[in-house]
Length: 169
Image (cartoon, rainbow, N blue to C red; front, side):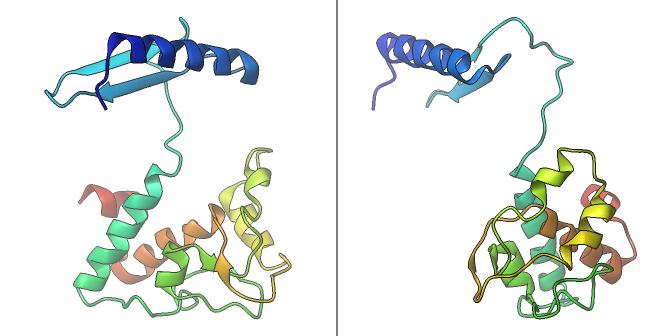
């Protein structure tokens, strides 16, 4: 596909329309061209070099990389249960491996407790509540955010370092 001026014009018009429909105060995009140049666009005037963005699910890639490093070092295996490394309780009939955790294969309802984080519940409060979540009959793909805290606790359990310090080493 050739990225023409016409394409960009239509893309920007479409993005601005969606911005208004969804009542999003501002947005930004960037397209990297094959020659290495990039095109960027802000949907409004509310963004600048000091604007902070939530990292979102990009952090899940960091989590998987950290666990892969620990597997490579022989400190843990993909099929190891997370229960021996976490300080929070899962519903009694769940025993997840690291592979299942990172692949979002679990019997929890999708996005379990995520909405509570938007109301100010701390991570520890959310983790304490996880044990009371009603599970499904079987494990299948179920996207999770809160459950990824198990990665940070696993890193601490195996290395003695908190997750952030481990990432920076």
